Length: 466
Image 1 (cartoon, rainbow, N blue to C red):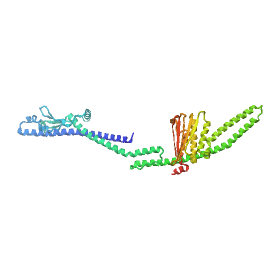
Image 2: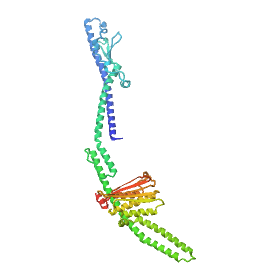
Image 3: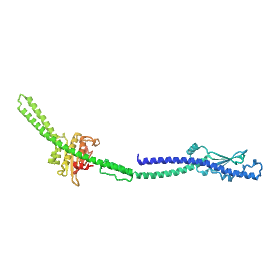
Image 4: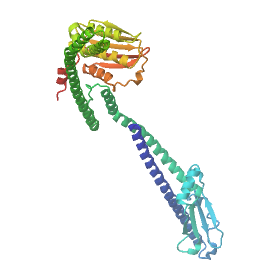
């Protein structure tokens, strides 16, 4: 879930809780206001009737008070004017049936919804009536009972709740909008940090985050920049170590090739000469001895062929002696000689390869050698095309492409696994280049691009300093 939506959700939840508290408070206040209004109505009506009662008593000059009660005069406009809207007043006099006077309820607002009416009745119940004597001087004069009509109480409460709820909802919506805008603006640095981390993931180790005005984001930016710098130093050290390992590997290969050629080559040559001598000196009666000598000669030729093939894979001094282009043509010719029937290896060279730095030429040769080996080992191609293009514009680059029709699937090739692909990737990365594996017309295409002046061991170690 997005942080912005999460924060807005929390804000909406807080606003909803506050709005619920406000509605509850308004309902309680409306209930108290209804009771207070009924008490005020009873007080006002009582004062008017009490005044009328004593006026009649004085006019009658102390006559019997049984007929002084203002029964016929109390339901007048004067009395009705002091009754609050929605309230009913009942005059309960001795010996007479109670009479009731109610004011209109339409002025209190529209009817309340059923759900609100049910909740209000459940919480507060019916309105509480207020009962007071007509006069405290004569308890036999009667009583006045005032109470809000249930419908009037609901209308009054609903009017107040709806007004407060509407205002609060409008304010909550406005707060949510402005808060979302403010939070979104405050989270802009987070997007910049995420974009930067993605660039860092893609290998752009020279990228740095700018400073932010927010202290928390500024600390994150500083930590990310330090991580990027540490990764750059680690990558430079790894590149230097890889380049040095490849140099050591080439030296070991030269030493091994020299030993194989000098020791095993001479031994195999001597073995062939000895087998030929045995075959020539065998008497006609020892045909078995001649056969054994010929078998030894066949094994010697097979071993010599295997040794020659191993020397071709091990030796790189041909690149230094005859140049990269001639070495590549020799490599392709050797594969054409040893390939299965119908398989053709082709070489296409674009540009001048003679002026390449020695280590770049060796890396290109080793990459081409490994690509051709993989094409034969992991597929059954009928045609393998090797293309090398050298561009000297600017700093200069060299691009190598190997395409086959062996029907492989690029999706199934994992560049992180397999010694061959991993070795190619490491060589390309050590030169500061890039490698890609894609789909060809009928097989796979491996492409590698390297700068002619890529980081060598000394440069990489210099860039890996603390």
